[in-house]
Length: 416
Length: 75
Image (cartoon, rainbow over all chains, first blue to last red; front, side, top):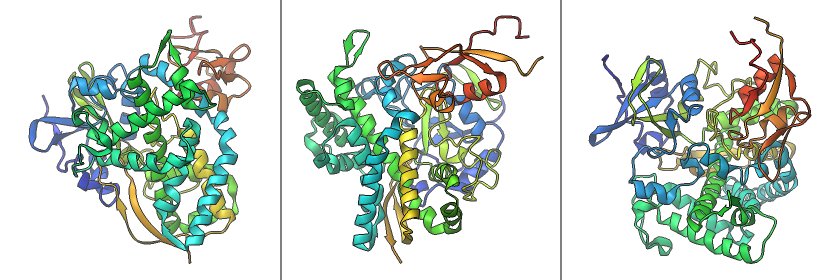
């Protein structure tokens, strides 16, 4: 056997992402032939194959028979079987089970259907920009990036406006579970063993409890929302169990909130650093769609997802054994110079084919909310341009302490 | 090998994730059913090869399949 290419930097270390995507590290990994083995600190027997090139990532993403989401965990660290089962939502499953669950809600997220949310999103966007202007600047995350996506996904789900803030809080604490900071295990009235909770976070208990209570209310009094759809749904004659329903709800709130919020947070940085590019699009709004794709590529809100090999196989000439962890680094593939010439250049006219992989590399797990995220960004950027708002970032952003999301906690902006 | 064939397309209903890319790219030919969340073909499913291949590649669920391929066109 040939010698493994071994990482010199631990990609699982959250500290690596404290100033954004470590482009130099990923550039070096992409240049190496084959895949690189990343040992996990403190455990010589544990590690993963780092997939850093665009074409390799797409291969993994589109082959769930070989690279499973249901075998092992979709995060780097393994967890016990009972813990996997307790948290399983469609993102942790393979077709065809995944597909049956996904189709319960998929029609609400198609590119055509999301156009129906345009007016409601536009209203939210202008309200947040009004608030930003009234405050004369401030924390872009609190004022703009956080409230827009949570408002939109909560509207779709049927979470009352008064509870939106609580959903942001719970979602934030979920991500904190991927950080190096321990959490109070009894927060949110949690009595469940943390090991059994997503991200090992007591906030997961909070979200699940909230979901079950709201689901109960919708069962009694149905509304035209996704919560009602989920509590009434039947798969081959069976209703979702409380746990299945709560896990579904939690996934939707988390994925609908955290990711678009991250792109919007990064947008403030792009507006500040790449003003000329935005100026071009302001004069020619036909470029708005490709600009939105560039904002999403450049943000890469999710750093990675993991798959687990189900059989002995080979990728990029590297042998992979059944049971090996295979980690798709979107944050690297989106800057693969083989697909995106001058990848660090922010180019609003960059061709949208091949597509970036911020929504995944294709395959059944392709981001459910992709069209919704695009629409939110498109409306927001268009509004900023039309209202001629200049946004200047002051100081450095504070990144979320995580190896999984490329989130920004705080970002101060001023309006000159 | 001919490169400008007419493909006959159908939806693999086991694979379809209801992503709606087909409906976006070819609204005359595909529609996602609001109840089942599955795309359906409107009409005869016929499409020129180049366009069909682009569409099949963009389908996230890899659920757009060619149903006329067993006529010796392969190999």
